[in-house]
Length: 375
Ligand SMILES: *Cc1c(COP(=O)(O)O)cnc(C)c1O
Image 1 (cartoon, rainbow, N blue to C red):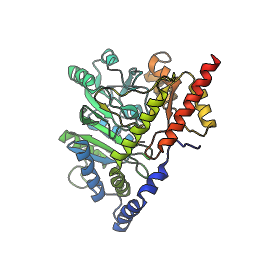
Image 2: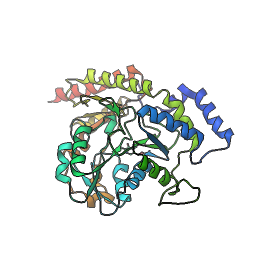
Image 3: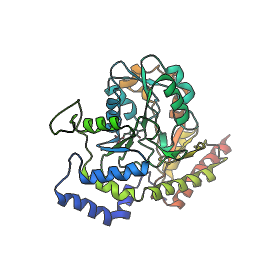
Image 4: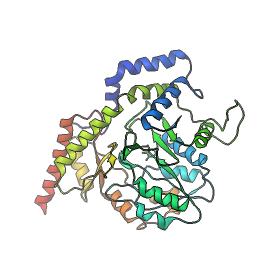
């Protein structure tokens, strides 16, 4: 059996009639990229109601969302932002691009998310913000982070790139921070046909700043610029694709949770460490990530049996050349470094047949059986 890690084409196959017609409507309208475009505005409305936030601001990518959020929060030179090194590079890259200093703290090995108990020791007089990442689709411990942020007067900027559809105590990502950034990159739970992202916030002033920064710092008056900005509008075509797929998001995320249930039921007691869902959380299952000391051998075995898997993330951020100077070197983040060595993400997506998931689980079990026999 052949089990690919993603199947993006299946999304098109499921929705081709609606997608073709939505994209055709944009093409024939002659309006493709414009501030406040009609399709982008409609998507923003859909998403602000889905996520229950006052403002949803469509942007060019998830990375741009983070970059613009940092600028809008006034984070810059001399400021420190607390985050983790077990994430996609964009979380840290944008902090550095803003001129600020990323301060890495370790993660909770059960969730791969920032360890709230490690945050306070990293706070200095220069700390301005915490950027927690809702990694793999599970929200961080928002209550603990909120308490620390309030105590020290810090803003919270959520990297919710992997967490569309996730909730904690019934609230979506994006409701507890000053703002949150989502990504609609092709392989995310809700994927465009190219790059796209979103900022959400309940703060009117922050929303206005983000909207200005999105288009060169242009304020309400055309060709009047209030601040530095970028060119970071979402294309109308991407918005049209996303509006069609958004109708399927909750069903698609439900399918992901079924896959997760299959893995969890089959692999309990197999010797590999399984991901957990914390109380109060609805997991969006962007990734199903197990831990095992035999990670590389397991990945090879799965590949030999036709199963693709992936390592998120093989190298912690503080080991990469542009970010080394911000970290404490090898051994400074023991949990992060241990996870980089033994995590493996199994295929989980909206079009993975349930029997394929069962096959994947069987292959993992076969592998752990081999290990047991060798001992
Ligand atoms: C995907 C991702 C981003 C960046 O999103 P893009 O849309 O690819 O720019 C940022 N942070 C995390 C954690 C991500 O997974």
